[in-house]
Length: 283
Image (cartoon, rainbow, N blue to C red; front, side):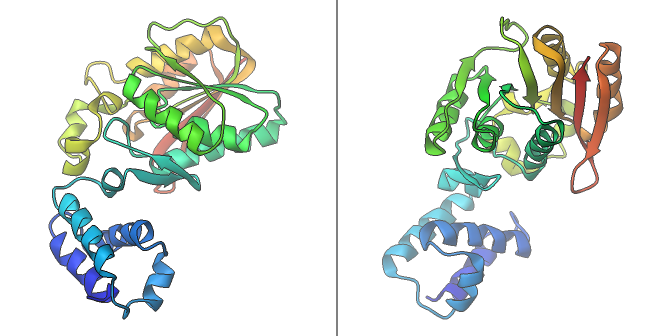
């Protein structure tokens, strides 16, 4: 079997789980892992035969993909902000929208000429935000907090994988206290309401950790308030607080931050035009 036929086989077998374009993209990710080349090179090699040993690997991966398991969990890895990350069902798969949040933090640091930073990532999960920030802000001291021991284990592995030092903290932000003052707090906390759950892709519901995804319909901003309250005590004057948010709760999140007397509150849309990020300041 050559690579062109293998691609067609993947598309057929994944029909019903992924459309043609999505299945092709998934195949591209698998090819990069198994055969070590990107989709551009795949076009050049489309007529080449797939080595027998590799074909066995491809078929094993395809069998897992057919269960609905996301390709990142099947392979145990993904890429975020150009960096390699290990992932498992203990952590959320990092999303492109979160890369935009990281970019906004880095942009703000550059514009304001901030240095010698103390940064805390709340609800770190895979560690993607903390690791990416530390990798690009080498002199910053970066801490990362999560309630899940399993998540912190993976985040610690990702820090080692990317050769950065991060202080990991196992705690629930709703009950956590710290004597330190931070220049930047950043968080992508759980924000999907139970009402929204039914509209989500089955792959997400079956495999990604619900602890990191869902909040009650009655109190969807529970973690945002807790982090904002922590910021009131633990952000330095003029320090910045960044959130990734529920696109449907932008107005409510802005109002909550305003009531708590944060200033320079800015709502930013993501690449898809959805209200996705907020930055504010403690004056």
